[in-house]
Length: 405
Image (cartoon, rainbow, N blue to C red; front, top):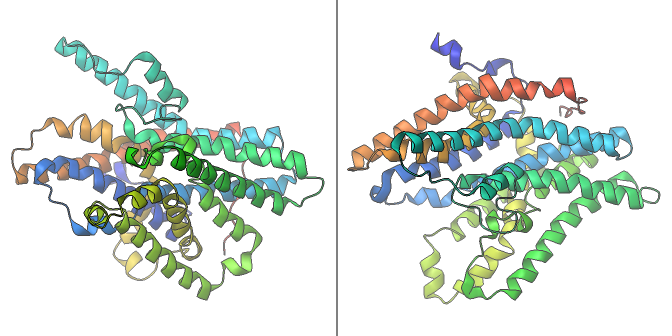
């Protein structure tokens, strides 16, 4: 009975296994980082943690690849970019992300109010204006995200990217469609977002003293509008240069380069090496790097992984024999629910209420945290996220599907 309750029928799902690996890896890295909170002062820091890529940045690139592919295929099939295509694109994206987000956000607010009412104490929620910003995805539009539900900084960046990227495409199509082919218009759109955002970051980096640090650019919408565009650039290459994309030798070489750059970027920005930068007098240069070049470096390094992982269509050998593929597909399917539930709703609201009095208690909390995340995310996906997402088929036109290699 329990198996039936938590089963998502992953064996019948039509998936690209390599992309599922990327999505599962991204969310597991994120949740693993948050799990260490439970250990408190007993966490000494595992060295291998500093070699892990940034899970959120991996999400950005993967999302850009998938969403960019949909946008490009829709544009090419329609042979023009108009209001109906734009609204259909937004409808389908928002049916995928907004209901789950609003359910969890509203649930957090209601729970905080109920807990305050039961205890007779004042609630600790932000003011109404700040809460409204969360519903409009402007909680971190031009400044740091508030402490309440802080992990949503990345979702706000993604949602605004879904707005700006097709709008830029529409404008460039309107201006140049009579003289440019659609392929050039798509490339111009991607480069406009990437180059424009990077120029903005460089200008801000030069204007603000280095002594003020990294400026939190990683989590601010207006400084990260290029975040998904590196994945969109990969989708552009796949669509317009299919022979190059399917070249097995090139795929393998790009995988090696991409993994090497990703690990290098992760390690050189980890806290392990920060003392070295200070001792060597390189900290100002490091700070400038983290304000500017770090973002395109990490985006491009992860985009280089896409050809190989997109070509890994099915699980074979040990991946399939020992059930690893089903686990990976399961995690991939519930990844968005895991993202929304793991930190504030589960770790900060429940698990962290248990005092960490010893290392063994800390590890108990880590195990409890992982168990709650996996169970509650599966239930949320199965009984809310997936049914609501399926409603978009009734309210929007189906988009062109990805061709199988």
